[in-house]
Image (tube, rainbow, N blue to C red; front, side, top):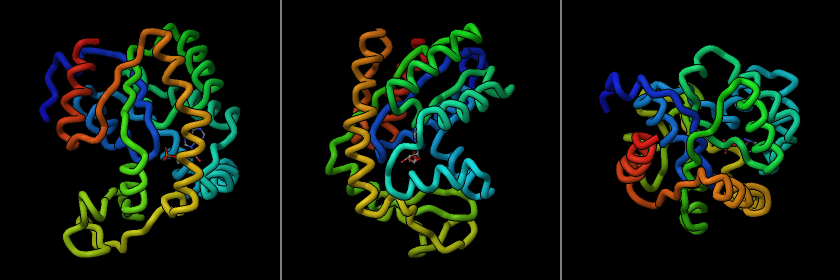
Length: 226
Ligand code: AMP
């Protein structure tokens, strides 16, 4: 997709809200390219810390491997530091954050302090059975982070990354016990944010079971009206 000067002239912050496996990461990358916004994915920030073996990474891993949320104070501090970086002045697409009401309130406060706000919350809606199928079939390249799906987007050669031939791996939290727990956590802690943002007049529902391109055009249509 081509960037146009009009697209990149616009500055806004949006949240992609949805259960694990809804395709938030894929759509966030598309928005990031189309609108030149920074892509802030809390899960990716934690995984970077795990790879660098920082104290934050070590702490986060103990929660992530079980499918539990990392505590709010740690998560909020990490994201607030990230959005203070210069690239975020172009607008941010939040992916996987906020996941609790406390995080949502902390984000509102941090943005307000910088004279900014959320322009829209895109709720990517996908049925639970589809999520389970997608998550357990997801494979990742440990070298370049490319994401494959054995059912919908398999690598050209089984178990190998198309770009660098690395052996694909399954995230520990994409294995069945953690997937079940992540979905429970989504229902109890994150789903209430749908009402929180609906009450704020910011919620837009997107049908996340459509082909990637259809989901993308729904999201771009909403973003273009902001
Ligand atoms: P994700 O890559 O977004 O699926 O996140 C992977 C895992 O990272 C989650 O299951 C949580 O353990 C942790 N995580 C990511 N984002 C958050 C967040 N906003 N709050 C708490 N934990 C998070």
